[in-house]
Length: 182
Length: 243
Image (cartoon, rainbow over all chains, first blue to last red; front, side, top):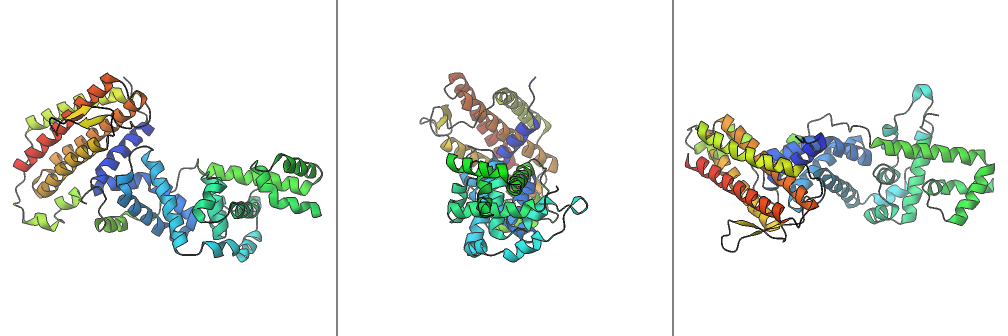
């Protein structure tokens, strides 16, 4: 007898609960929340930092609830939710109107980070280092190097040029390399 | 020293985004520049470590975020239907239900067994379907023109059939919602489990059809199975409503 793998079970459970949630079942949506909140919270933490991660995570799930009728099962629910998450986070940053200025700010932060001690005994956690990057560099770095987006896609989403996206990525990497164990 | 102008392009080099000529020029520089070569290696390590982040198990939030979400979605119903929370209603938090007569009832054992048998049959079929992996089907069902309650196999958009199922499920949930305080918790759990089984079967069947959407057998089988499920949902709804 063929049995389903855990991934298949999860996919099936997601599909079930997405159907129920789209029909208004809040408990089904809560099950989806519990299965996917770690990944969404990770994304939020990396993109906007620890302080705002909880609030943004809640925004993502509320938006997903409102958009459930657009989930047609073409992709896994987790993939769909992740896209919603990225859009919510980027939309939030745009709405606040702080994108452009953040792309030219942040030198002080770079300075502080660059002078952090490093070495085998004072290893800086890579994730923590990401969170301390200047906003613009962090967003581009997370989207490109962690999430796998292309510069063209990032430029479109952030309303910046591809050149700016590339320079911000390089800036982030140059900062982070200072915090790698040698 | 002026050659270190290449530093600003090292990420593009690491990402393979430089043109052939620029790449050759940079590599010529790297051959004689230990500093830039060292930076290239460090950048590659950063890129590798970033990519590896996806392999780590994500860390869940420390705080409870669900309660805040629950409050907000209660005020913002999903586009597909009305918000309800059977558990809350059963605990007496749904004000409207408090006026309902506090009469508890349970399905008879025979009724539950009958429902389970139907689901076992359906699940058995869907388990077979589930062994065939693939993306969800683009659409294979239509509503019969003779009888709107009947599903027939037809290669059209499944959105209408989905809507039909969604309506049937929503109707059952509405009745359960209204009957919540009167229902035996074990009965509610059974119905909840059966609903999950039904939806799992639907998802599995869709995946199987994605592999072979033209299969007459699969389409017929799934149409009949979905029809059976609709009938089961309607019967269950009637039983609960009539209790």
